[in-house]
Length: 360
Length: 34
Image 1 (cartoon, chains in turn blue, cyan):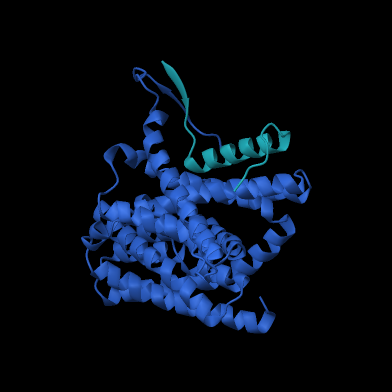
Image 2 (cartoon, rainbow over the protein chains, first blue to last red):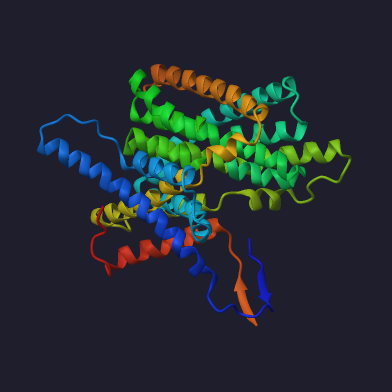
């Protein structure tokens, strides 16, 4: 779809807008790099002193340092715009990750993920709708929580907010619940995965299916292993690709309920909501499949992906403020928490069953 | 008067990744360390 060309008649500002992003990007890089240094320092100390220290990945350090800054001194005002770019680094990292998947694998694993995603979507939407109705949340807040838990957290809620005409307060309740549960799952999922002795493949698929926000799903996978992170990204990306269909369904439902005209051009609506970075992921995967890159170049692209994720994980911590999340009320959180635990349990059972049947 | 091409964050991430991949392919930069 061609993008609109906007002719701006505003006077050119003294400094370009991107300069305002630099302090925040520098903060992301500093915190991410500190996480990497901490991992390396602990590993070197253990080696030098012949100690068997647990290998805590840079991912967790970057998130923890970000959380400490965000929940103590807070993110400086000058850095906020730059810190918000963490979503850009996440998408960039995912596109680079395409270089490590042959197209055949993407289609095969994407097809397998698609079956799990379809089941996860149906279960999440039914469960969240039942819980929201039972606990007396507003119908639109219930819809937002159902969309957020079934698809991809924050971006799905933002996409749906306009489509179903929910108000800002309902959207911020739903986003708060999804983010708080995402932060919890970062720590809980790898612990459960290790306790159950899950394979990298099964764990990655589980994280991609059950953790709602893409950044947290990627981080949960990366905390387990590099391979698990790849599968988490693939499953989560498959889920993200479904965003248009679910939001369209809800938009039509709410338009009918309000006796308004529904979505006129459904194909345009689906394309508008489709996450375009998925196309970049597929394109890089195709280029790798046809051997455009040498082995050394593929390693370079994987390293670029790691650097992009380093900034993302620092941003996950910096963007999570527990005080603000707490202020957003307990009932949406209760619905979110009960629903998410149930979804995590159901998807886990599904994957363990599939693992036993097909050997994931 | 300024001509601004408005692209979404998704498209920028695709453009940036393809640009970086082209630089890696061209060999302009030495090995990307981790």
